[in-house]
Amino acid sequence: MPEVQVGDLRNMEMKRRAFNKLLASAVLFLAGGGWAWLRWLAPNRVVEALRTHRYPGPVRPLDESSILKPGTWNG
Amino acid sequence: MNVQCELCPKRCDVAPGESGECRIRVNLDGKLLAVTYGYPCSVHVDPVEKKPVFHFLPGTSTFSLATVGCNLHCLNCQNWEISQQNPEDVPASPLPPEDVVRLAQKHGCRSVSYTYTDPVVYYEYTLDCCRRVREGGLKNVLVTAGYINAEPWRELLREVDAARIDLKSMSDAFYRDVCGATLNPVLAALTTARSMVPLVEVIHLVIPTLNDRDEDLTQLCRWIKENLGPDAPLHFSRFFPQYRMHNLPPTPLSTLERAKQIAETEGLRYIYMGNISERESANTYCPSCRNLLIRRSGYRVLENHLREGRCPKCRSEIYGIWK
Image 1 (cartoon, chains in turn purple, blue):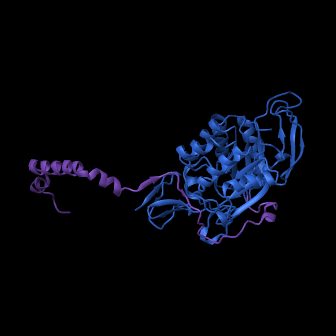
Image 2: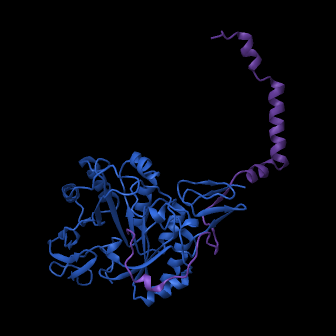
Image 3: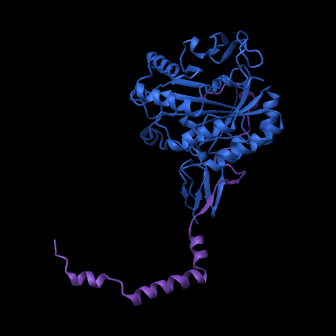
């Protein structure tokens, strides 16, 4: 493994000017409507789904005579 | 745009054109749609004992319905042909909530049961039916695995008269490996139901080698007694190889008897054994004087000696909904 030099670590440090730049851009982003944009990007959270009346599978009329037969399913 | 479904603890992040794990909550153009709303795939008039619910209007018929889909994927599912299918593959019939009430009344049912798959996933249909059913003077019975988030659960329970909830194991690993779910939300759902619903019955399917050790059963019974109370009826149900679990044998009768003994030792008062032909196991006895209260055979009630919800011999009050 290559040995880590002290100079390498110094290059990774964030200088004060770079930090201030990052902070200012973050503040500008949020002040300029960035928060709303982030919220738009996040998925919409939903508990109740919309009631659709379009079943995607085969639809057949309810056979009332079969209702009185015991259900084959458990429960 | 994606939609996050907050109905159950899976919190599916549903991409456009896709459905959640339950297969029936679909993201269409950024809107979450309940695509089976008003389209049950199974509608029957069953004895309420078939659910099984034993402390609720014994001997009455319950109008039972289900749509396809489920948020659990139990390897041993007994109804996988409707619970683990896409709505595109299963025929369904239009039945709006107002017609559910009309048909239930027409066929002499005292209640409507949301059963067979899991009413949690067809939540909106269940909720609207429940409200109509109450307005129509009937009662609502929920048959569920209880895998749902707290807020929608509480909203639904306000309309429910009896809940029969599965407690499949006290092990989170079991829920993850066998059912594709987790334990804690189920425990929370059970305790919430106990605090909001007049009647809660618990069913536990005993599967050889997976949840049939003495420690497992003791832990389960102890939890029920401490959190739901000793009056909560508990049904031990016999496992049969099903769906993707054909590698295990049916539960021996001796295991169910052992489970019943453990439940009695832990102080539970109403213990039943299901999916077996042994007759005595489905009877209800008075926990105080051991007097026979209800004799059942299969799903039929042969004798009912209860008097206004009390034992006719010692006058002890029996937990349940009796009129």
